[in-house]
Image 1 (cartoon, rainbow, N blue to C red):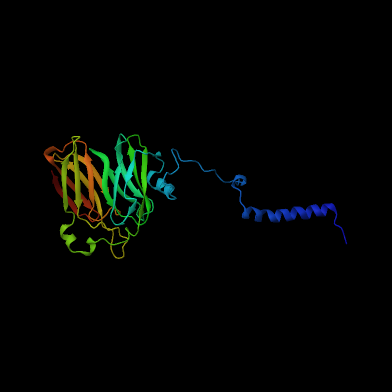
Image 2 (tube, rainbow, N blue to C red; image 1 turned 90 degrees about the horizontal axis):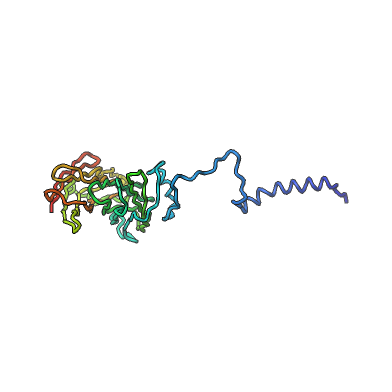
Length: 281
C-alpha cells in the first residue's frame, strides 16, 4: 500500500472541509454567527417604532402606507371596541374612542387584512374624537384607529376581531333592489342632549356602499359627510370608504349643544349624488 505524504493529506482534508461547510450551514443556520456581506446595509429602525401589540405580519405595510415618515406610537388611550367574534361580516359594529388624548385633529380607521384596508377618516372638530359605525370584514383582522394630534404624532390603538369572512366581496342587499334608487342618500337621525351639556347625534344614510369587489357591481360609496350647525358653521366631517357597511349609521358626541336644536348633514357619493338633510331633537 502506498502511503500519502503529510502535505497531501492536509490538502485533501482542507478540500473536504470546504465542500462540507455550505451543506452544514444550510442544514443548521446560526443567525448569531451569520456573516453579513460587505455591500449590505444594516436595517435602521424607524423613529418611534415599537413592537406591534397585535403582532400582525402586515403592520409594517400599514405603517408605510398610512404614516410614511411621521412619528407613530402605540397608545393604550386609543380604544377600539367591537365583537370578539363577528357573526355578520357585512355588519361589524365598531367604536373608536380617542377622547382620552387631548388635541386630536384627525382619526383614520383601517383593517390590516381587508382587501380595501382603509375604512374611514374622521375630523372630529366640535365633536369628541369618538365615533360608532359598522364595517365589513373580509376575514379576521386587526381593526385599528390612528389619531393624529396637533404635534403631528399618530397614536395607534386597535383590537383583533374574528370574522366568518367574505364581507368585502359580497354584493349589497340594496344593489339588487329598485327601492334604493328612490331612497338613495335619504338621512334619518336624531339629536339627544347629554348630561354634560353636549349633544349626541345618531344618523343613518340609505346607500348600498358597494366595494366594487363583487362580480359585475362597480364601487359605489359615500365620499364625504359634513355636519354643520344651524348657522352654517362646520362641526365635524366623516369620510367613509368602501369597507363601511351598507346603509351606514354613525354615532358621535358634540361637545356643546347645537344652536336651534338642529344640525345640517350634507355630502356626496362617488357618483356625485348629493346628501342634504336636517337632523333635529
